[in-house]
Length: 384
Image (cartoon, rainbow, N blue to C red):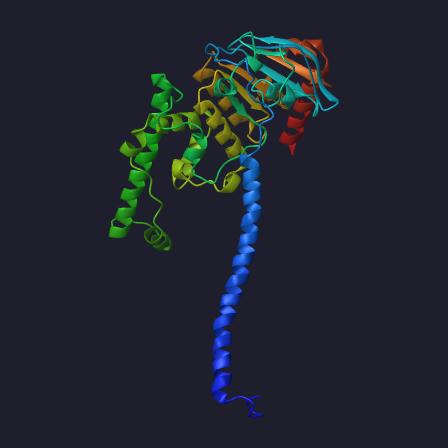
């Protein structure tokens, strides 16, 4: 058009300039519209969570009960998912302070059984009792505050290791490990980390000052890549909450791993704990559970990703810290449960065998068969 003389060169130039200005606004408008649509979809999902009505809630006759001591009873318990039966006529009484283990094939109802105690699933009224009181008569908050539950799948938030362990415990809340000996371990652990950080800092200063003889190939990495800072001991130990975090990690067998982290307890674990191994995730979840010092501790196959030595150490620590705690353990490994006060073997929703490790071996039944198979597997692995 400009060549044909229908428009002037100035008009053509103005058109191009206006077009260049408008195109960015149009692109921005498209971005805003797309962002609005995505935000609307996210808001709907967020509102769905906020407006969700829990299927399990306090009934009208629920009221605060005396402090939970830890005895548990399953009284002729039968449970089903929709119309599919899972548990049938479970009759079991567990005294406070005892350790009871449940073992059996996949799908035998072990996880379902222990999930009924904190009312993650709702059992028929009067079939699950804590301290002789049906769990439905406890306020859900009181019941779950007294129970530490470590599920099969560990969920960690994108935050520091310390905050993941202390999840749900405020700075003003009562914390675990009120006894001086255990809290002393937590304080000592934090002091050890702080001393190590201080020593490392002094070594780095010597390197930078040229007062330490180290290979040339390491000088640049040490002097140019400073380590993340670790809070000084006074800042860490000022809060009982921090001491309890360290003590809980020590009980869960996590303290040695924490010492290897650049930021120790301030280490960011990433979304769903992506920076941690499977065993570290499980031990973090165990530390989170014992942090609250529950009267009842439930481990639902939560030691499957740790080695046998670490597993034994964790279980020994749990017994030493609180001998009067009631502990329920679900596991496929006999090594995890052999020291339990009572072992129950489940099959198709029924308890088919019960007794101590030695008593069940003498029965020469399902448990003895499982024990022999696992011994054989361990021997074969050792020879490889």
